[in-house]
Amino acid sequence: MATKLAALVVLVAFLAGPAACEGAFICFNGWLRLPIICPRGSGTPREPVPSTSGSGLSYGYYTTSCPSAETIVTEAVRKAVVVDKNPGIGAGLIRLFFHDCFVRGCDASVLLNTTNSKNSDTEREGPPNKNSLRGFEVIYEAKTAIEAACKNTVSCADIVAFAARDASYFLSDGSINIPMPGGRYDGRESFASETDQLPGPFSNVPQLQASFAAKGLNPVEMVTLSGAHTIGRARCMFFSSRFSEMNQTYAASLMAECGDNGNTNVNQDYVTSNVLDKQYYQNVIDNKVLFTSDAVLNSTEETRTEVMQNANTAGAWERKFEKAMEKMGKIKSDQQSVEIRKVCWKVNNNYK
Ligand code: HEM
Ligand SMILES: *[C@@H]1O[C@H](CO)[C@@H](O)[C@H](O)[C@H]1NC(C)=O
Ligand SMILES: *[C@@H]1O[C@H](CO)[C@@H](O)[C@H](O)[C@H]1NC(C)=O
Ligand SMILES: *[C@@H]1O[C@H](CO)[C@@H](O)[C@H](O)[C@H]1NC(C)=O
Image (cartoon, rainbow, N blue to C red; front, side):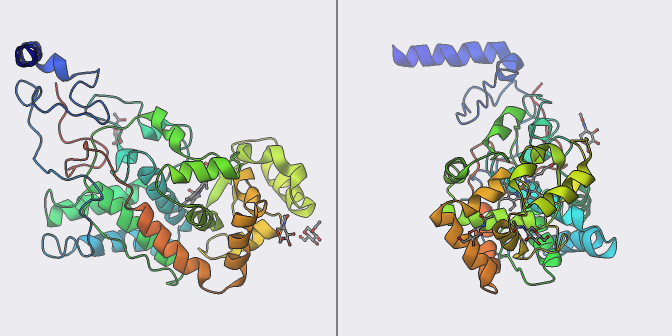
């Protein structure tokens, strides 16, 4: 009886053809994949690449399949950050990696604007990302060069991870060397609504710890990774409500910069704005950081201990940051990460 019912379901789905795979995520509903229903009558089949992102990562993953891959990424990042003197793009690349990995795992879902389910309201449109993420062109440029060197071999997810590693190296003047394994696969879905998994600037410590814990990262790693706010910029709308809580000299200069425009960008680290260093932690201690989520790190014993150590011990934060970034790069994707995308902003083929 159960077998018959199952057969009927398969038959009905097959007769319905392409429509069965459209819109309502019947093929891919996020975590549940129903491969029996979909292979036939549902557009071009996917290339079979059967591993879950993060499960098979290794160093030098492309050494034999595409030896120039990592160098091409490094050179694209060097050109943007060092040669063209645009450290902000480096900051953008580090954040792009964080925002990719925290939503559906490190699967380059953050790059998509065209997906399997034909959704255009992708992660890029989510509130934390829209009008904010930058560095996309560097990823696209590296991908184009890599495809020319070795077709269909290197995932966009790995390019994002390598680019974050390289941006960290250049912005720290070589002090931060993240060992970054490769072997991720690219996802086929992306949804703006899922960016609510990213921590927001008004978060308190329990909220920050919970959002990191949900991704397998501990409270120490949360404080460590927050140190990335030693580079890049932020919009006034995220901190203008707390001018009265900041050091007043600092608040006054920010107020002058912001005026009444919440979209104005200011440097996150007012001392060494373009250097990936431990200055952020001194700024936390001095009450000269932008967000609630930065300032609260001085407010619990557990997080304050880390802040003090990072601020006062040479090299301590840098070593922790290298490890935490590598670990963030291992946040597992789901089973939708099954392809090596040909173009980083769209999936290989849409089911029609
Ligand atoms: C701890 C929780 C975090 C919160 C609440 C948070 C929030 C934010 C916000 C609101 C901005 C400004 C965006 C804008 O104004 O457009 C920002 C910028 C930035 N964040 Fe975070 N972030 C967090 C953790 C991280 C982590 C883990 C990293 C990377 C390891 C990171 C890297 C960056 C960078 C580099 C920028 C500057 C981007 C640029 O200049 O383009 N953040 N963050
Ligand atoms: C998606 O992004 C790419 C690269 O920025 C752009 O060329 C393309 O037109 C965009 N497509 C859509 C549907 O927005
Ligand atoms: C605020 O920062 C200024 C220097 O920028 C410093 O002179 C002052 O003591 C600080 N205020 C407090 C309350 O620590
Ligand atoms: C942060 O904690 C340290 C150590 O207790 C303290 O010296 C410093 O004044 C605190 N900073 C702020 C902004 O509360």
